[in-house]
Image 1 (cartoon, one colour):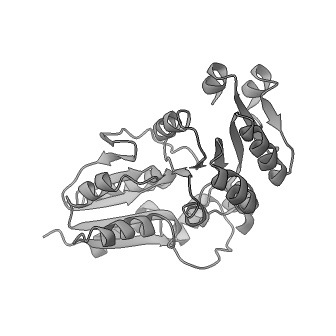
Image 2: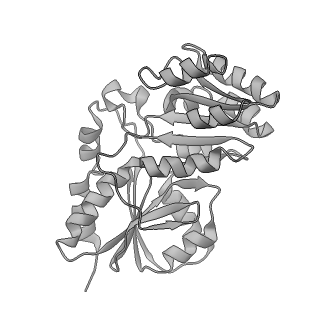
Length: 297
């Protein structure tokens, strides 16, 4: 974003009182185009909408529940319906802020945002995936939502990039694992463990959730008989829904298994690792589930 603002004088960055120790360079070098709206997320998007209607490209940053849930009416009526050039950058996908309690957990946003016309939706899981998504965001004239999680501890190497929709981190013949966001770290750790049990899985990260390149996704799915969809998201409206809709629409014949967050309030408090473990989306739980549900005769 810093580099984009340096090259594009009509671009502005808004934050709702967040970004300590992250945005100082933006504030210092672009004082007239860095706006802290304070703890007033509705105001932030109202200001952003007015600026976008005046021909500006706007980036708005906040924690996902404050950016999306608190603002949904404004996002729908102003940004979506008018296709405004506003890029919503949401931090804290899934259980990233699990210590802060239920108000900060995020697992309904994809279901909500996918219903809105004109929106591009991105869920990158690594630094490189973020850069790839930003290449798209910087060059479009319309609204986008990008959900960010914590940076994985390991810099995983992409072995095959599939258009602008996603990337493979591993290739195997026994099954395909599809995930999104920084849960990809747990997925790759699980796939590496499964290799020691002679189970070789492909790992695909779907980082662009909308618009969908269905022809590319169906081409990938047709190469496998068994698919595991694993997400740090509610079972309704996220990856499970996306892939199931494509399978049904194109009448694909394959077995699909899913690990998602249950359709219930998630009220327990703890860090992301703890909440992933009790919801069985940590690497060891994923490995156990795949071992118990795969037939690699």
